[in-house]
Image (tube, rainbow, N blue to C red; front, side, top):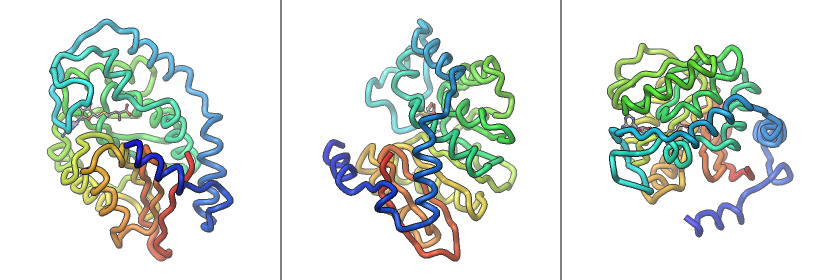
Amino acid sequence: MVKKYLTYLFNRVNAHGIHSPFVFEFYNEVILKAKRVRQPKIEALRTTLIRSKEVITVNDLGAGSRKTSKPQRSVSQIAKHSAMSKKQGQLITRIIDFYGFKKGLEIGTSLGIGAAYMASSTHYSGISIEGCEATARIAQKNLTQAGFSNIEVRVGEFSAVLGSLPSENFDFIYIDGNHRKLPTLDYFEYALNHSTENAFIVFDDIHWSEEMEEAWEIIRLDERINLSMDLFRLGIISKRSGQRKQHFIVKF
Ligand SMILES: C[S@@+](CC[C@H](N)C(=O)[O-])C[C@H]1O[C@@H](n2cnc3c(N)ncnc32)[C@H](O)[C@@H]1O
């Protein structure tokens, strides 16, 4: 991971190194301005979860946790280790606001912190999928208490729920769970087939493991994708057909 991060640091570019008007704008208007996004309600929710004494029994259907393999996990630990960071949340809100994305899908809800960052954009509504019932119940409670009624949490194994969704095209898809190669490639196929032309498809943890690294390489080289951006923690792709295929390692 350290080696991968050093490679990222060495190769990443800021506005000066970006020779694509779209990515130049993304860097200046989205990445740089994301720092200004204020979400005190969501950060207060994070603090409450980190302070929580509740322990739940999780049903982990994914690649598992690096911290523990026990099913009993404290809500506090989940909030600390699995929830979207503030920096990423600010970026996600800014992306949805700036491009005016309206219909979203999140694969991996956990406690609902990421979903809350998505839900805070006006005109946005989405579906978020979580396989662990106990976790999903807390996410639903968090979203309701924070006043976000525009996210529907669906409980079930990712592939099963994806297969049951009505056929519709999303303009924002966030893939954040079951960080293994083949499932990630399956979610990629689903996202490609259920997204609009200029949709953003975002993968979390693209450098988390060798498997994720391999999946990301296949995804970004796929001929159906014309834009890919490596922000280290996140990988963002878009079909944007009719344009030259380009890959960027962007400072974030
Ligand atoms: C990293 S967490 C999601 C964090 C959340 N997106 C956020 O931003 O706060 C991943 C979640 O995916 C769920 N998950 C992993 N694999 C799954 C699968 N195959 N089906 C359903 N849920 C799964 C886990 O239970 C976990 O809660």
